[in-house]
Image (tube, rainbow, N blue to C red; front, side, top):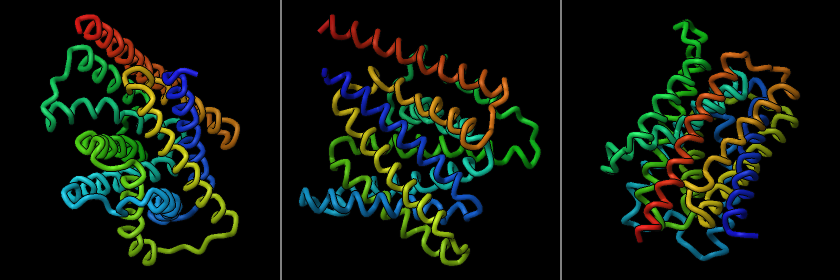
Length: 290
């Protein structure tokens, strides 16, 4: 199997992991969002801790990377809490697709903070993706608008976290970054979880601990996939999460996305596919010049 196909397979597995995480979070029912987020990250922290110890790496990374690791973790934590809130209050595939705006927002943040010039086709893709979100949100500016807003802001904070990951690059091992983030989330949300703790049934415990396991599978799969092939060549396959989430929404929760939401999915996916094709085209041109 070629490295590119290995990367694609790992992305499909990663997408399945994240989709199952979202489904299990929703299945856990009436549990405070911060409590759900804490248990999801507690499992990831334990698994990542094992990887760090096995490879005899520093648990909290290098001293010079602390600001980056801390900032990435803070943004990721807020993004995840907002995403879980959206999952609890929206059709699962709607919440998932709004969170998938993060690659487009990453382009904007990279241009602002990393001084990476945004190309015309990227700007066009961002505009198209934004139009797609309006089909999903169907803005009415009522109380029902809040979960959609949470979904959008979950993507904003995720994009901020990914921007800092770009800055980190290969300065830290992926399992160190995952442990740092999971540990930070667990510790920062612990006081809120204690204050608003809701007793859980055995079934809810199983759902949330399983969500943590699937989330770790998703995180590791995503990280390793991009070591086999560049993001521009395979990133489009990560959008399979929306297919998984839509099927789970229909068969597990009986939630069928309306036609405007489906139009929004197609619009955002189309923007991503267009950007994917242009990235590969530009890469081939640069390769031929080299």
